[in-house]
Length: 157
Image 1 (spheres, rainbow, N blue to C red):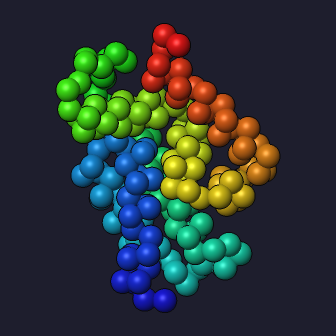
Image 2 (image 1 turned 90 degrees about the vertical axis):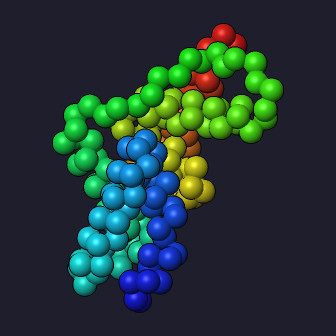
C-alpha cells in the first residue's frame, strides 16, 4: 500500500475523529497529519491482526488522548441550550451542530471515543475491537450516550 492511497482512503474519517476530541479545526488537522506520519513510519510493525483502518483509528485516538493530557484543559465555546428563534434554517442547523459538538466534548473520554466512531458509521463490532470491549457493551454504551446527548441538547424535555 502506498501513502497517498492510505491517506486518501482514511483521512476524512480520521480528521472527524480528531475534531471530535479536540474541537479545534487546526489542531485536528495537525493530529490527523501526525497520525498518518506515525502510521506510515510504523507500517512495518502493523501485525495484520486487525484491519489497517482499525489500527489507524487507534493511532489517532492515542494521539488525541496524548494531546488532551498535554493540555489538561482544552478550550471550547459555551453555547446556551436554548437557541434564539432562527429565521435561517442553515444558521439553525449550524448552531445545532456546534451545540452537539460541544455536548460531545463534555462527555467522558471513552464516551467521546465511542460516539465519534459510531458517528463515523464504524460497526459496533469494530468499535469494540478498537477500544477493547464487547459488542454488547458498545451497544449499551451507544444507547446511554445518545440519551445523555438528548438531555443535554433538550434539557427541558
